Length: 108
Image (cartoon, rainbow, N blue to C red; front, side, top):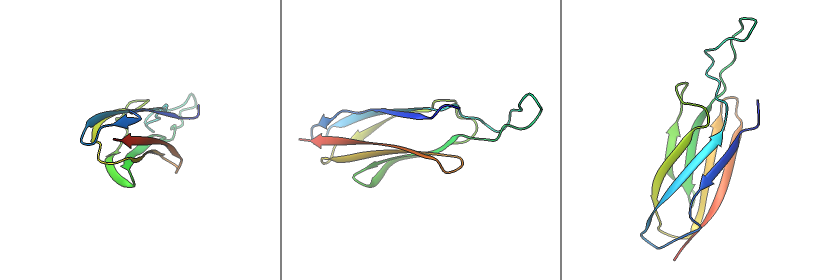
C-alpha cells in the first residue's frame, strides 16, 4: 500500500464576506474489509474514516466515512471568508494514522 497523499485547492486570498470554494482529495486505496486475499483471508478494513476542516480552530466542515466510500475520497465545499487565518485539513484513517495539511488564507 502506498502512503496516502492529501491535496487541497483553496485560494490564498479572499475579500471579506466572499464565499470561496475548497476542494480536497487524498490518494488512498480504501480497503473495505469485505474482500479476501488469494489464501481466502479477509483483508482488514483500512479506510479514511473522518475528514475535518477547521478555520481558525473552528470546525467548518466535517464528515464521517464508511465502507461504501470510494478510493481517493474527494470533497468540495464552500466557506465564507470572515477573517485572515489558517485552514487546517485533517484525514483520519482506521488504525489511528492522521494526515494533515494547513493553508493560510488572507482576507482583505
